[in-house]
Picture 1 (tube, rainbow, N blue to C red):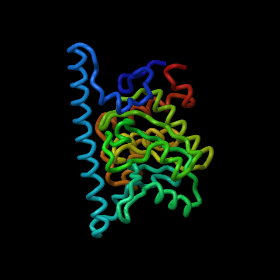
Picture 2: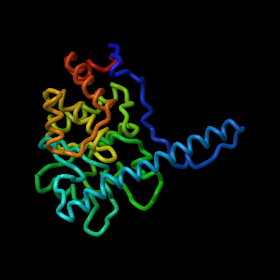
Picture 3: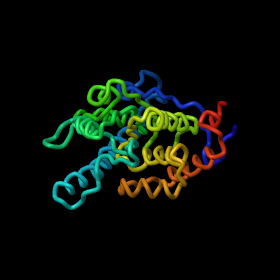
Length: 260
């Protein structure tokens, strides 16, 4: 089954994250290798600056706004349905009465008598590692299993910020995992990116408009009603809409895979 232009099949996605050491060590090759390395290092530095700048602009106002009573709904995560959570990348480092987010989430799930069965991380591994800045530790696969559930499934979907540059098949597989967790096993799924506003919005929309049996507009309204700060890019909106249209033509998720 070929992919329409709105949801191009990028082919297999390299799910192995690049190690930070690989980005820090200059090559011992010719001048072209050095130039390539410097360009990659500059790109990484720009991404790091944007990551920390946008994270600060997103998280800090919401935190202090709630502390001062100015805002009440800009939370780090929100339940979109009873068992589907859309949120930001949890912070493991504890600052005063804020954090460890995973400990807070685990406590919240206990009060609801729920078990976390799946985490879908819609972001680059280097973001999860804070671009190597040791000031704050974020929730990686190990932390989720240490603080919340040792048996939780972890699905990593590498996506650059503000983009929808991911293959259709990878999203189909992730949405199928959300369905198996939420609808079959009756466990809770936490879907996140950096701020829980764009990439993870796209993933949640893809789930709601397929296994959630919701129309696109209804799903969009539901997400925004429960998490007002969502702000998807146009490519992410286009991908989610195209995904819903294409999945509607399939009998099940497996039959939609381009490799089937």
